[in-house]
Image 1 (tube, rainbow over the protein chains, first blue to last red):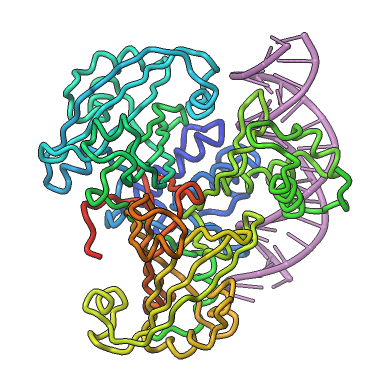
Image 2 (image 1 turned 90 degrees about the vertical axis):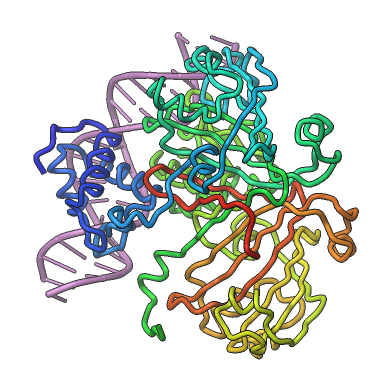
Length: 252
Length: 252
DNA sequence: TAGTGGTCTAGACCACCGT
DNA sequence: CGGTGGTCTAGACCACTAT
């Protein structure tokens, strides 16, 4: 624990995360206590708790009252699934991803967009409409809004670039660290039906997503509309806290 | 704001939640400031922030720096951060959940059911068709298959029980510790349309789920079909650890 | 019983939003 | 500019866990 004296809860989080990934803190064991961490980092206990809450959100630690913060994920085993872009995911499945820009529009952020992107209302944004393909077949329609700080760079990307996220990372140095998704079902609009080649009002799976950098800056807000029977989202949910304390009898 | 002086952040949360549900705080507008809420509830600002964080987790409010805590759309969102049953989730949103069994059938497990439930093919199972309501309005159709070991106890549950999961836990001692979900969009079948009161082939959000006990024993396999605009599922994904994967097709 | 997380208080300063 | 959320400090007491 000879660290360069972080100063905010984000620094503490980053440092703890690195140590967990490095294996300095082993899964299944407890971290040093909040009080001790506060001393070592030279911050108040509340700041440490703030950082730990961030690690908890990422599923890396779980608090157990009276026992400590237990390190959860065994990052070495790579059993967890990484956050992937459409193209990254497609390639990992052995498919060939494609994309085609249908429209690009510069405009001013609506209040909804401003809230999602955490920018000022009416600030400059870039809106892009793309179709996405798997093996040459259109499976998804994507309407994305980019905040001004990245808009001009996005505009330079070729219309048929298969992976925008890859370009952002490799050429712009912008990496997605976190994303929120809201999933529901909607009927195809006439615009959707034209671009996706389905009948109007047929069911589409809609995913609204906001992506963020590691520092919490919003990168994009997008609405994806998937053809049915092309993509399924899977979620594994657990009730960790209850399970830890109530496993008296196991018939495993 | 003449409330009976709550004393902890949970009480503050409960009170704010009730007021939002009652419409005292309108979606799209800001709550009273943290400082004002702290004064009115007679607590410190930190306690108010703690309560607001809980509302944020439930997707009911979003903080906007400099502007306030904005009440989100009344569109219901379901988060996978916590594993909850339909009834538990509904209650956490201040809604009144209901349920009604439309059909109960004893049968033998199909190969698909056997695989999902990890039981032998053709072993005895119980299939139940239920509609689920929020505030008296039908929002979801649920077709669930239970394995033999719990089937007879499930059959004793009243047809209008609002929370099957609660009964399983409190009366049978069976607790759901883990669940897998697969989410996509499907058109309403004629059977769906009759029970949900929508046109045939209109879009439904389908959630296929398998629940397990802490020891990994399968409790149930179910297909839920939600009316559009009633429920949205939320997923937070992170590059370090997450709960979201995408898969092409499904092996339903 | 000693140590841990859970919670609360009462201040303080900053960055940001709207007018 | 005034008001708002974002963050931090430095204490305090409690419920719970481990030994």
